Length: 168
Ligand SMILES: [Mn+2]
Image (cartoon, rainbow, N blue to C red; front, side, top):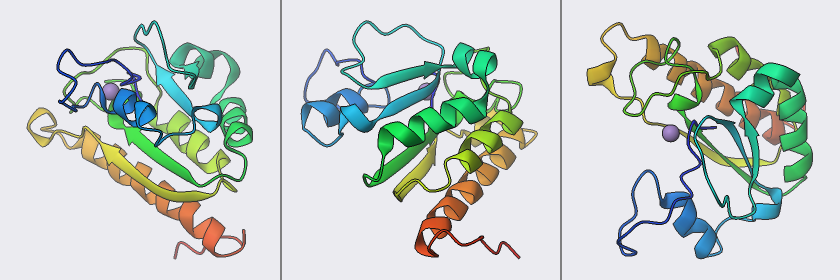
């Protein structure tokens, strides 16, 4: 989940940063591109290295549920890592980040998306790019905490044999 694909090559091949890590990971064979997807994209990329793109416009047009189903089907039963860049959300819901882009998902759309991934073989995940100095009202921190909570529930869902997750 991201406004950006982070699949851009760096001028300096020895450097890995927040806009190039995906490029390096694909090049090193760490990502199975046939089973991977980017969601929420609002920036131009000429070559996404074989990773599917479900841009934010598609999420708004077809719904977070439909996009989540497509991602789940693409991932199949492969071990999945879910990286959630908070700038996948619209700046209205996550203003505290370094490279905000308008037109992103709402917190509600993100919740639907994440919960509809239930059943995915999640083995790891993250929430990145929350920047407290840009987040004086704490809106972004709240969004990030909820995203991580939903990821933990997804993980628990698998570990408990798809039984309902007790969040009490
Ligand atoms: Mn980003």
